[in-house]
Image (tube, rainbow, N blue to C red; front, side, top):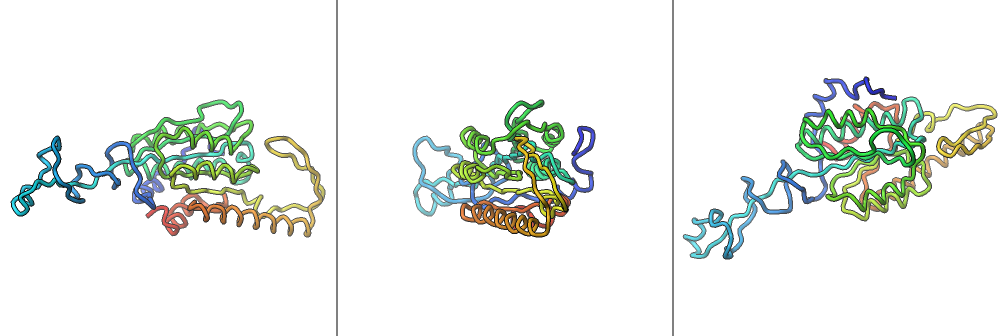
Length: 298
């Protein structure tokens, strides 16, 4: 796992992230003036439309050239440029703290890259750790904005604790109920929770633009096992005894493929962008290639 003294990224990768922009699929209302188009009308330099003057309007916005032709007062309307709030949700339950490369470490770096790109565009970024139960350290980063927000963002992710237990459904329901301004949302999780459908449904109930990073370790994707084993659930401690042979591994692979296909189909039906992430694939390759190919970044 990434330690508190190990940086998330090197300077060369950060320079590459500086050249990327987060794409949104629809107009979203922001909170403060920023660098993105908003469905609101504002006072930027890009003309949008006219509307008739009504008493109390700012007379400085009257188009006098149009008045000379129409002999009626009209106001110029401009495209407002506003910031978005980018929501980064990281599953820090015990099942994520596993694998080589470690899944939670991968989620930290993926959220860090996504957040840094947003901060470079002067958007606002907030981060929440989703694990439940007793844990040491903060579970939420208050929103930050601009390049100066990169340091607290990276610090929070580096010090994010591993939770003793997790409830993905409760965490997503709570977040959907309390998030003030919906916007683009990145969820990084292995979805090792039977209630993953309810969790995604809770987030879909708000107008978030959801991207799901379904992170699994190579040992989960291609287990190298042979013989008798006693496995322990990483969160509940419940044991299960197996005999790993070719037949069992084939059935495991079939069930894994069916599960990932089910999750992807569920996401597609709800407008959620789904990524199947292998933690052995570098974050740099994933961000610069796959996320750009899918139109999440440009």
